[in-house]
Length: 318
Ligand code: BYC
Image 1 (cartoon, protein in one colour):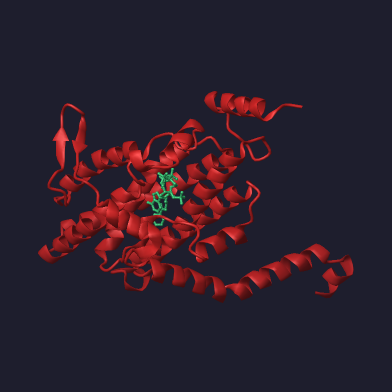
Image 2 (image 1 turned 180 degrees about the vertical axis):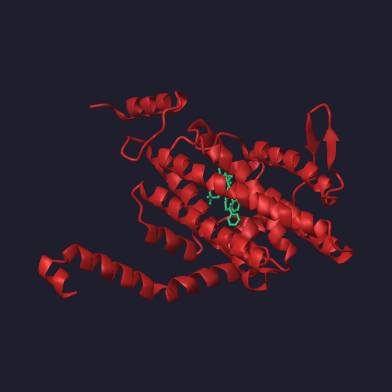
C-alpha cells in the first residue's frame, strides 16, 4: 500500500513526463477540484457566451450573416456540452454544476457581462473574444488532463473559424461607408479592454496559476497569454485601418513585444463579483431557459427509461 507522499510523487513524475492523467488514475484532491472549477467555469462561459450573440440573430443584416451567426452560436452550445461531459469524468454531476452557475456560486468569463449593442459587436466578439479564447485554448489542448485536452482540440478548430468570421465582419464594415467604419471602431473601443481581461488577473494577483502550472493544467501564465494576444491582434487592427483604444500601445524592440496600458482592474473585479453591466440579466436568462426546458429533459428521460425497460412484446405494440 503506497502512502500519500509516494502517490503524489508518482503523480508529479507522470505530469513532468508529459503523460496525460485519465479519469480512473489516482490524482490529488486539489488537482481534481481545480479541474472541476476550471472546466465547469469554461463550460458555463460557452453557454452564457451564446447570449450576447443570440441578441443579433433576428437582426443580422443578411441571410448569409444570419446562417453563419446561428452556426457559430450552436458551436458554442456544443462546446459547453463537451466541457460538461469532460467535467463529469471527475465524478461530479452536471446538474450540480448548473445549479452552482444559477445560484451565482460558479463563475463564468467576465467578457459575457458586456452588452452587444450594434451589429459591429458581432464582428468584435468573433475577432477579439474568440481570438482571446483561442490564444488560451490552444495552450489547453496540451493540458495534463486527458478528457479536457481532447475536448479542446475540436473546440479550437471551431473557434478558429469563429475568429475569422468576426474579423471578416470587421473588415467589411471598416471598408464600408464612414458610418459603418465608425461602428466598427466603436465596437473595437468597447470590446478591447474587456477582451484583455478574459486572460484573468495579472500574474502577481493570480491565486491558482502557480499550482496549475506545476500540474500543467495551465501551460502559460495569464500575462504571457495576454501579451501574445496583444502582439497578434495589433497588426490585424492596423491592416483594416482601425485603432486600438490605448494611447500607451507601443512596439518595444528590446522586448520584442508591444507595451500596452494598464487594465482597469477595479472594473474587472467588479464584473467578476457580479456587478458588471449585464451580470443579472445574463443569469436571469439562463435560469429562465433552464426552467422552460424542464419538459424537454423530462421527455428525454422518459424516453430513455422506456427504451431501457422495453420488452419484445411492447416493441410490437408501440
Ligand atoms: N472572468 O487565479 P486565477 C468562449 C477568476 S468562452 C471571470 O488567475 P485561473 C466563447 C478565477 O476563476 C471561453 N472570472 O484563475 C463563448 C479565480 O476565481 P475562483 C472562456 C475570472 O483559473 C461564446 C480568480 O479570478 N475561456 O470562447 O488560474 C462566444 C483568480 O484568477 C476571470 C475559458 O473559460 C475572468 N476573465 O485562470 C464566444 C478558459 N479570470 O475560481 C467565445 C478556461 C479569472 O478562485 N479558463 N477569474 O473563484 C482558464 O483558462 C482560466 O480559468 C483563466 C483564469 C485563465 C480564465
